[in-house]
Length: 184
Image (cartoon, rainbow, N blue to C red; front, side, top):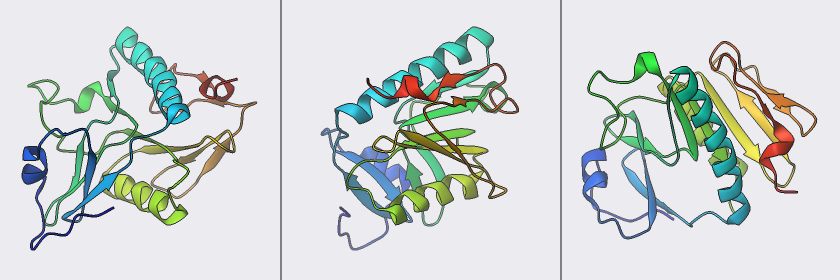
């Protein structure tokens, strides 16, 4: 649901909004409120996030977090909060992890599709991440129990429960059985 305002909102204004438990993103200056995710969504985000974070920390590969805001565009501003994100160590600012929004796209953005999301909404998120410089977007479909990988070159790949998620060029040594993401 979008919030009607008489002007476009900036990322700085979004950051100043009250922390009232409502999840918000900013899409081309328009504030979008979303429902809290359901249980399966949270379970998948936690499972993948823990695996990515353990890999990232063990090898000094970078940052892994959940629902962190990334400023993907300016004038008008777009801030997205992927369900899980990875930023390589080489792209973490010298000052360290930020208190506010990241000023770049993540290297990997993960979106877990909610039952109420449309295909157009999901594709808009993928496009925003890739246009802003993400190297990989994983879209997880809980109902189908599959993951679709999107890359800037437009070549996609679908991973099913018999496959293992891996992207050696971006995530060297990381591997996660797709079946492990979905509750039994």
